[in-house]
Image (cartoon, rainbow, N blue to C red; front, top):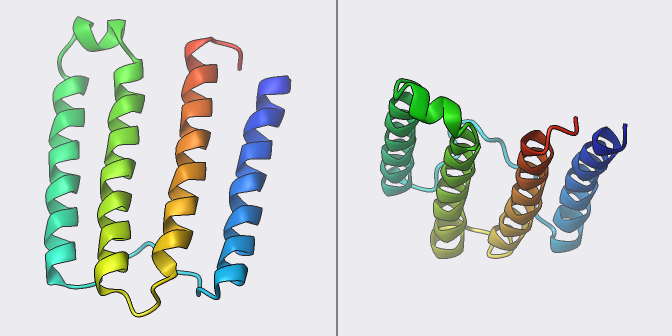
Length: 128
């Protein structure tokens, strides 16, 4: 029961902290669909997405090696989110209209990574 409460607490922390930091910094809520700063940002993100998709497909079809290390899928997802959001943070810092938006996005990424690592920790220890 306790791991579920920890995960729910992390979800609540992610939401409350996102609302709070955006209110403090005066940054509007952004959508995740087609939210690119420029054409270069779109191309880099698409390249990362396709690369991660190829990696996940290779891991999924690699047979017994992948089944003996199931945490590799979680690590691939973690790397995918980190890479795409890092590119977004850089593009917001470099080309964004509101220079504080990259700070809000960085803070959200950190809390999201803590959440994903928490899920991976509890999944690997079979305590859910």
